Image: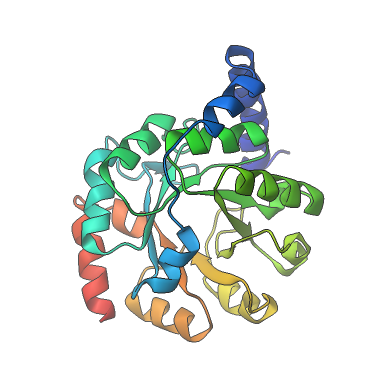
Length: 261
Protein backbone atom coordinates (compact mmCIF):
# COMPACT_ATOMS: atom_id res chain seq x y z
CA UNK A 1 0.00 0.00 0.00
CA UNK A 2 1.29 3.45 -0.92
CA UNK A 3 2.15 5.92 1.84
CA UNK A 4 1.05 9.55 1.76
CA UNK A 5 4.58 10.45 0.64
CA UNK A 6 4.38 7.94 -2.24
CA UNK A 7 1.10 9.48 -3.38
CA UNK A 8 2.50 13.01 -3.13
CA UNK A 9 5.52 12.14 -5.27
CA UNK A 10 3.38 10.35 -7.86
CA UNK A 11 1.17 13.41 -8.13
CA UNK A 12 4.21 15.68 -8.30
CA UNK A 13 5.56 13.80 -11.32
CA UNK A 14 2.23 14.30 -13.09
CA UNK A 15 2.23 18.01 -12.24
CA UNK A 16 5.75 18.47 -13.60
CA UNK A 17 4.92 16.61 -16.81
CA UNK A 18 1.84 18.80 -17.34
CA UNK A 19 3.83 21.98 -16.69
CA UNK A 20 6.54 20.94 -19.16
CA UNK A 21 3.89 20.33 -21.81
CA UNK A 22 2.77 23.96 -21.44
CA UNK A 23 6.21 25.54 -21.09
CA UNK A 24 9.28 23.45 -22.05
CA UNK A 25 12.17 23.37 -19.61
CA UNK A 26 14.48 25.33 -21.94
CA UNK A 27 12.05 28.28 -22.03
CA UNK A 28 11.52 28.19 -18.27
CA UNK A 29 15.26 28.04 -17.61
CA UNK A 30 15.89 31.06 -19.82
CA UNK A 31 13.23 32.97 -17.90
CA UNK A 32 14.81 31.96 -14.59
CA UNK A 33 18.25 33.07 -15.74
CA UNK A 34 16.87 36.44 -16.83
CA UNK A 35 15.37 37.11 -13.41
CA UNK A 36 17.31 40.08 -12.11
CA UNK A 37 16.10 39.93 -8.52
CA UNK A 38 19.03 39.78 -6.08
CA UNK A 39 19.03 36.77 -3.81
CA UNK A 40 18.84 36.88 -0.01
CA UNK A 41 20.91 34.36 1.92
CA UNK A 42 18.71 31.96 3.84
CA UNK A 43 21.69 30.62 5.81
CA UNK A 44 23.09 34.03 6.71
CA UNK A 45 19.69 35.21 7.89
CA UNK A 46 19.57 32.32 10.35
CA UNK A 47 23.16 32.87 11.47
CA UNK A 48 22.43 36.52 12.22
CA UNK A 49 19.01 36.05 13.79
CA UNK A 50 18.42 36.21 17.54
CA UNK A 51 15.51 33.77 17.21
CA UNK A 52 16.29 31.59 14.17
CA UNK A 53 12.58 31.07 13.59
CA UNK A 54 11.47 30.20 10.07
CA UNK A 55 7.75 30.94 10.15
CA UNK A 56 5.73 28.89 7.69
CA UNK A 57 2.72 29.87 5.62
CA UNK A 58 0.66 26.68 5.54
CA UNK A 59 -3.10 26.34 5.00
CA UNK A 60 -3.51 22.59 5.46
CA UNK A 61 -1.70 19.29 5.96
CA UNK A 62 -2.41 15.78 4.61
CA UNK A 63 -2.94 14.41 8.12
CA UNK A 64 -5.03 17.18 9.71
CA UNK A 65 -6.82 18.85 6.81
CA UNK A 66 -7.22 22.62 6.87
CA UNK A 67 -5.34 24.46 9.59
CA UNK A 68 -6.17 27.99 8.42
CA UNK A 69 -8.39 27.90 5.35
CA UNK A 70 -8.46 31.17 3.46
CA UNK A 71 -5.20 32.48 4.94
CA UNK A 72 -3.74 35.31 2.84
CA UNK A 73 0.05 35.35 2.26
CA UNK A 74 -0.07 39.10 1.62
CA UNK A 75 -1.12 39.55 5.23
CA UNK A 76 0.50 36.62 7.05
CA UNK A 77 4.02 36.72 5.58
CA UNK A 78 4.75 40.45 6.10
CA UNK A 79 3.17 40.04 9.52
CA UNK A 80 5.65 37.26 10.26
CA UNK A 81 8.53 39.48 9.13
CA UNK A 82 7.38 42.37 11.32
CA UNK A 83 7.03 40.01 14.29
CA UNK A 84 10.66 38.92 14.02
CA UNK A 85 10.86 35.86 11.77
CA UNK A 86 14.35 35.25 10.39
CA UNK A 87 12.87 33.77 7.20
CA UNK A 88 9.60 32.39 5.90
CA UNK A 89 8.66 29.09 4.35
CA UNK A 90 5.82 29.06 1.82
CA UNK A 91 4.05 25.83 0.83
CA UNK A 92 3.41 25.70 -2.91
CA UNK A 93 1.85 22.22 -3.16
CA UNK A 94 -1.84 22.54 -3.98
CA UNK A 95 -3.36 19.07 -3.68
CA UNK A 96 -2.06 18.11 -0.24
CA UNK A 97 -1.21 21.45 1.40
CA UNK A 98 -3.58 23.97 -0.18
CA UNK A 99 -0.76 26.17 -1.46
CA UNK A 100 0.11 27.58 -4.87
CA UNK A 101 2.74 29.45 -6.85
CA UNK A 102 0.67 32.60 -6.30
CA UNK A 103 1.26 32.34 -2.55
CA UNK A 104 5.02 32.55 -3.08
CA UNK A 105 4.75 35.33 -5.68
CA UNK A 106 2.50 37.40 -3.39
CA UNK A 107 4.75 36.80 -0.37
CA UNK A 108 7.80 37.95 -2.31
CA UNK A 109 6.11 41.23 -3.20
CA UNK A 110 5.35 41.97 0.45
CA UNK A 111 8.60 41.10 2.27
CA UNK A 112 12.36 41.36 1.99
CA UNK A 113 13.31 38.48 4.29
CA UNK A 114 14.49 35.19 2.71
CA UNK A 115 11.78 32.88 1.41
CA UNK A 116 11.97 29.10 1.17
CA UNK A 117 9.89 27.34 -1.46
CA UNK A 118 8.50 24.41 0.52
CA UNK A 119 7.56 21.62 -1.85
CA UNK A 120 8.57 18.13 -2.90
CA UNK A 121 11.42 18.97 -5.26
CA UNK A 122 12.42 16.12 -7.56
CA UNK A 123 13.19 17.93 -10.83
CA UNK A 124 15.26 20.89 -12.02
CA UNK A 125 12.06 22.31 -13.51
CA UNK A 126 10.74 23.03 -10.00
CA UNK A 127 13.96 24.81 -9.05
CA UNK A 128 13.71 27.12 -12.05
CA UNK A 129 10.10 27.82 -11.05
CA UNK A 130 11.24 28.68 -7.53
CA UNK A 131 13.68 31.26 -8.85
CA UNK A 132 11.01 32.90 -11.04
CA UNK A 133 8.40 32.93 -8.29
CA UNK A 134 10.68 34.69 -5.79
CA UNK A 135 12.28 32.02 -3.61
CA UNK A 136 15.75 32.41 -2.11
CA UNK A 137 16.07 28.76 -1.12
CA UNK A 138 14.56 25.40 -2.02
CA UNK A 139 13.83 22.27 -0.01
CA UNK A 140 15.26 18.88 -0.92
CA UNK A 141 13.87 15.87 0.95
CA UNK A 142 16.44 13.10 1.41
CA UNK A 143 13.76 10.43 1.66
CA UNK A 144 12.79 10.85 -2.01
CA UNK A 145 16.24 11.45 -3.53
CA UNK A 146 19.42 9.46 -4.04
CA UNK A 147 22.79 10.96 -3.01
CA UNK A 148 23.55 11.65 -6.70
CA UNK A 149 20.19 13.36 -7.23
CA UNK A 150 20.68 15.45 -4.11
CA UNK A 151 24.03 16.73 -5.34
CA UNK A 152 22.81 17.34 -8.89
CA UNK A 153 19.77 19.34 -7.78
CA UNK A 154 21.82 21.29 -5.24
CA UNK A 155 24.36 22.30 -7.87
CA UNK A 156 21.57 23.37 -10.21
CA UNK A 157 19.96 25.45 -7.47
CA UNK A 158 23.28 27.20 -6.83
CA UNK A 159 23.64 27.92 -10.54
CA UNK A 160 20.44 29.97 -10.28
CA UNK A 161 21.49 31.73 -7.09
CA UNK A 162 19.34 29.65 -4.75
CA UNK A 163 20.42 28.03 -1.50
CA UNK A 164 19.49 24.50 -0.45
CA UNK A 165 17.86 23.14 2.70
CA UNK A 166 18.32 19.37 2.79
CA UNK A 167 15.81 17.64 5.03
CA UNK A 168 16.57 14.34 6.73
CA UNK A 169 14.40 12.18 8.96
CA UNK A 170 16.72 9.46 10.27
CA UNK A 171 20.36 8.39 10.42
CA UNK A 172 20.01 6.34 7.22
CA UNK A 173 19.66 9.58 5.24
CA UNK A 174 22.91 11.13 6.45
CA UNK A 175 24.62 9.83 3.29
CA UNK A 176 22.73 12.51 1.32
CA UNK A 177 24.86 15.23 2.94
CA UNK A 178 27.26 16.81 0.47
CA UNK A 179 29.38 20.00 0.35
CA UNK A 180 26.92 21.82 -1.91
CA UNK A 181 24.10 21.68 0.67
CA UNK A 182 23.79 24.95 2.59
CA UNK A 183 21.58 23.97 5.54
CA UNK A 184 20.50 20.63 7.02
CA UNK A 185 17.05 20.26 8.52
CA UNK A 186 15.90 17.44 10.78
CA UNK A 187 12.20 16.87 10.25
CA UNK A 188 10.61 15.54 13.42
CA UNK A 189 7.65 14.30 11.40
CA UNK A 190 7.57 10.66 10.35
CA UNK A 191 6.77 10.75 6.64
CA UNK A 192 4.99 7.40 6.80
CA UNK A 193 2.67 8.05 9.75
CA UNK A 194 2.96 11.88 9.81
CA UNK A 195 3.31 11.73 13.61
CA UNK A 196 5.86 14.14 15.13
CA UNK A 197 8.48 13.54 17.80
CA UNK A 198 11.04 16.25 18.57
CA UNK A 199 13.35 13.62 20.00
CA UNK A 200 14.37 12.94 16.41
CA UNK A 201 16.27 16.25 16.34
CA UNK A 202 18.08 15.52 19.60
CA UNK A 203 19.02 12.04 18.40
CA UNK A 204 20.48 13.28 15.10
CA UNK A 205 22.06 16.55 16.28
CA UNK A 206 25.46 15.05 17.01
CA UNK A 207 25.49 13.04 13.77
CA UNK A 208 25.43 16.12 11.52
CA UNK A 209 28.92 17.57 10.80
CA UNK A 210 29.61 20.97 12.36
CA UNK A 211 30.02 22.75 9.02
CA UNK A 212 26.30 22.43 8.33
CA UNK A 213 23.91 24.90 9.91
CA UNK A 214 21.22 22.79 11.58
CA UNK A 215 17.46 23.37 11.57
CA UNK A 216 14.81 21.50 13.53
CA UNK A 217 11.45 21.17 11.79
CA UNK A 218 7.91 20.25 12.88
CA UNK A 219 6.46 19.46 16.28
CA UNK A 220 8.01 22.47 18.01
CA UNK A 221 5.33 23.97 20.22
CA UNK A 222 7.01 25.74 23.12
CA UNK A 223 9.80 28.26 23.76
CA UNK A 224 11.38 25.72 26.15
CA UNK A 225 11.76 23.26 23.28
CA UNK A 226 13.51 25.91 21.17
CA UNK A 227 15.91 26.69 24.02
CA UNK A 228 16.77 23.01 24.45
CA UNK A 229 17.27 22.60 20.71
CA UNK A 230 19.62 25.60 20.72
CA UNK A 231 21.69 23.91 23.40
CA UNK A 232 21.85 20.83 21.15
CA UNK A 233 23.34 22.93 18.34
CA UNK A 234 20.36 23.96 16.24
CA UNK A 235 20.30 27.50 14.79
CA UNK A 236 16.98 27.41 12.96
CA UNK A 237 13.46 26.30 13.91
CA UNK A 238 10.86 25.80 11.19
CA UNK A 239 7.41 26.32 12.67
CA UNK A 240 4.11 26.61 10.86
CA UNK A 241 1.18 24.84 12.44
CA UNK A 242 1.87 26.36 15.86
CA UNK A 243 1.23 29.83 14.42
CA UNK A 244 -1.12 29.12 11.51
CA UNK A 245 -3.73 27.46 13.75
CA UNK A 246 -4.27 30.82 15.44
CA UNK A 247 -6.61 33.56 14.11
CA UNK A 248 -3.62 35.94 13.87
CA UNK A 249 -0.45 33.93 13.01
CA UNK A 250 1.82 36.99 13.24
CA UNK A 251 0.58 37.83 16.73
CA UNK A 252 1.14 34.21 17.77
CA UNK A 253 4.73 34.43 16.51
CA UNK A 254 5.28 37.74 18.31
CA UNK A 255 4.06 36.26 21.58
CA UNK A 256 6.26 33.20 21.09
CA UNK A 257 9.36 35.33 20.53
CA UNK A 258 8.57 37.43 23.61
CA UNK A 259 8.36 34.24 25.64
CA UNK A 260 11.75 33.14 24.27
CA UNK A 261 13.42 36.28 25.59
